[in-house]
Image (cartoon, rainbow, N blue to C red; front, top):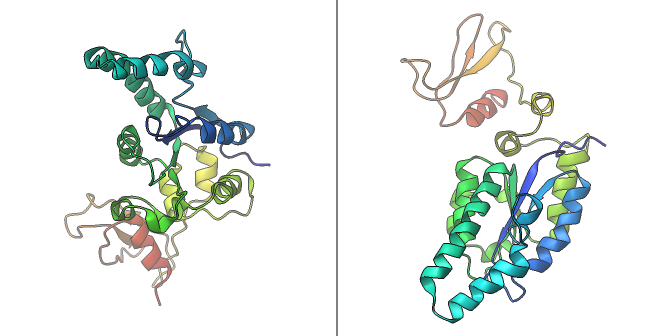
Length: 246
């Protein structure tokens, strides 16, 4: 049992205000599964478990905010919500990946900002798509990795189980780019290998796009005979085209 996900943090994102049960059920269901893998769970309804705050937000603070909203006390509500936003954003920074319950039947607000932050931090975002992947907004396909879209909790759990404890799991290029907080040993073990030079058999490397004034873009270069390739838009594309050349 490898337990590659040990000591990583997972933030649980999804609708709260517009969910009939305030987003409690699925978060409580998935948490034990994650904790069994020694993953630290950041549940925005239970910040008291991770931060030194005196009250359970789910029991005390959110009902109070609902009351302020009902009474039209918007300024007071804003002050209360600022505290929660601060805790949510701190939890995101401490998390290594995110699970979002993306229910297209429910309005999402804070979750949109949360997945944007995770994306900018180049962390994995696992989408649970209750209504099916075909129901997702097209924008998500342009911004997120479709291999992280799941139509059932079982599929999502199976993926996490594989990446955590399957010794034969083959890390994809997306995995290697996103799971950056795994141990160095895990990432080095699964690092994509660059095939040797076809001309001299020398060791080849993928050069930084800023390292040369001659070639603009990612390219493969031989460290022995100095042969190099055309440019590619990304490091991953350069390695893939080099390794699959004919």
